[in-house]
Every structure is written in C-alpha cells, then in structure tokens.
Image (cartoon, rainbow, N blue to C red; front, side):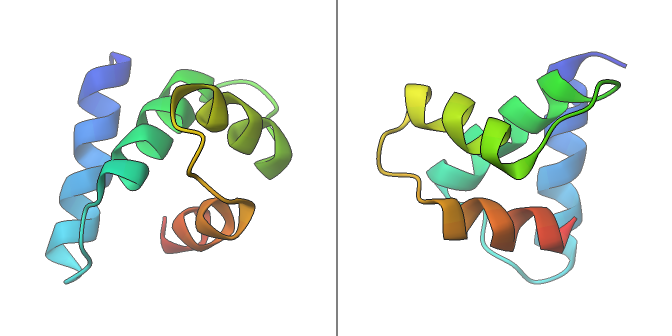
Length: 68
C-alpha cells in the first residue's frame, strides 16, 4: 500500500471515531505512513513533522500516535 493510501486510512479511522482531522494531523499521518516498516520513535516523527509544519508540538505527536 502506498503512503498516501495509508495516510487516508489513518484519517478515515479518526473521522469514524468522531475525532477531527486537522492540518497538523494530516502532516503527522503523512510522516507516519512514510515511516511504516522501519523503527521510528515519536521524537523522529516530531522532527520530520516540524520540518513540514513548525507549529506541531511533541504533545500533538504523542496524542495522535495514541489515537492510532
């Protein structure tokens, strides 16, 4: 499955659970989908995400990862 499809599946899971899909979460889903299959820490996800959107805080990463 490609990264975009995986990110879309993450977003659908959140929507079906009644959670909002924000721009920050979309960025996080893209980074997480890209990182699947390899060892990745929350810190690494946060660093990659901040390169795309500097407004993403590490707490947002933890909250989003916990939702998955």
